[in-house]
Image (tube, rainbow, N blue to C red; front, side, top):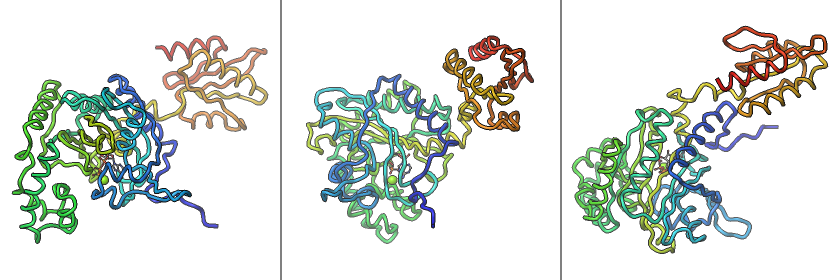
Length: 421
Ligand code: ATP
Ligand code: MG
């Protein structure tokens, strides 16, 4: 019978890959803790309407990327393509948003029907940050600084660049939008098909086009910064000033727009050259209008989401995963001959009891070629247990010294000492 395979674009994350994932997740959680953010856990499935109303009907996500289905009750549900909509829905539902400041984060799988390729999958993972109730540029700076600190912790700060732009208020953007449409309509023949299609539905997305001919048209297009309202200008210059003083480098990219409808004022992306085409590892911005759009009271908000797969790829490509995390164990313990299994298990338990940080794997099964089997585990320390005159003897190997015969007490002391040293 033919074997059943995984769904295209939905990956298994294998034991050889999970160390990088866990390292990334642990580092992110540590950094978010440093900024006193709280985790929120949200359902993976929401009502389809939630995404249509928040992300926008004429976006790539809603038009062609959502996994939407009717449940047994004929209600239209969607596997979440991103986390912000659900976070706002939950915040509103539980009264977390109005008149308070919230700093939240979430992690988990997202689903988009895209063409699978390196760095782009149909089930992928994001870690996201959402803040609510703070309207001034200091919080925009804070969320950017969280990401900057994370890159620093991971050793990749030199491999990413921060791109920054302001989209202005909704009114400013509407005015710019019609100026852009006027201009582009005069150059229809030089636009690529996608851009021509977007001209009616979502013209700001034309700015994202990678097509050369479209790019050349865009070179003389009106720029958004000329249309910004005074408040947005002020907000942007405050943000830049905080980032300058904090020593965070950025490039102002007047072409940067985000794919989702709900952004206003600040938008940003962290991009890298080290992954090829899928270079954006983290993206976010301000979305002051979204809470109201979903039926709540006006609530300022700013956040970002990072792509976990792309960051893991970066960690692997740049060889940034600490060597020690690549093996799951520090010490492998086995009996030298039959009849000592109970002693081995008891000794392994004592090691775990005395040194809680020690990762101990005890051998199970046949003892044939036990020396080789132990070495093949890649354990930096190996202990082989035998008995002489009814006393346990632990033969101890590590990388620096060939081996030593130790008593049980000496073994516990040696291992404890090395762990702490
Ligand atoms: P892109 O322009 O690459 O399609 P996007 O604007 O659609 O990205 P966002 O919705 O802003 O992406 O999601 C935030 C981050 O999540 C992205 O910067 C990226 O790192 C990651 N991401 C988005 N879509 C995918 C995907 N299909 N596979 C893997 N990672 C993704
Ligand atoms: Mg996309």
